Image (cartoon, rainbow, N blue to C red; front, side):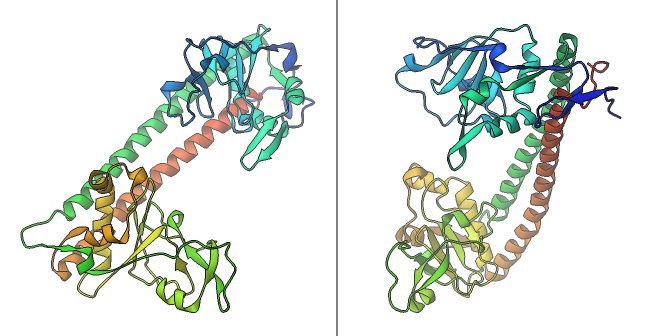
Length: 415
């Protein structure tokens, strides 16, 4: 059972709450001095990540490109506080353990204190402080809010006695490392399960001599969805109708049919762009080009838009078998291998109709499809269970950090 301190007092900060007696707060300005030191282009690039704090930029995937003029980047040293002003409320804050340069848009502070830097890193990156940054931030656009410099400057920094700061840092270093190791093990398990899933699909669909080769144009009909014209004036008789687009074709093969975008369709168009049970939908372009989805039920009153191809097979072919065959192509990088970089590929109707599939007799198609449905369902359940375990572990990690840095748990004898 977690041990608590014997006495608590009001911190005076609503978003921090009660803290152990003897803990104090100081304004940020009394501990850090804001400095912008630019003109060091040869220093190592650093970045602030929500999940990792301040680390070498090349040690993590980062979609933000480095500017050609590196002179605009700011030099920081170990112990400096680095804050992404636009994403502080998401946790993109940290005490640097490295010397290097960071974005000129960050706010950088040199230490002017004798507190434990490891403790401060845990404190500033805690969910409690992320909530505090959110209160100090002002929205500029959806998903982004910039921290107010004046409010940030006077933000209260919670300080236990020095020995407790070190004990807290030691405890969190050790306990979070255990959780992180467990999460990494579960992530590797998910990778293995996904590899096993792909192998099951590939093995079941491996053709034998008795299978025949048929182009898609010989086993069904393909249609590209309607051109997007949501902003066009509605014609007489047109009605706003919901439609499926590429974003609605999910990675698990299901198709989202709720809260859809709408645009005008005539009654005649609704007959052309209808969705029936057994339709295979394929994303027409972009990074997920060729990813299939399957319509398990008809969707009266819902159409589809031109980012999606519809494949409707004839009675001599099992639609579910075709779905699995198209998924195998997608997961085997078929489109990149045949057409180059998937970023520039468009799965036109002409290309789709020329794709060749290997088909066993109809009864065997149905048996293989049923087998894959059963086997992948089991694997998917294991993946979902493992993902839930990871989610709970991360929630426990966040809750532990919050409880420890705010003194809700006394770790002095556990460090």
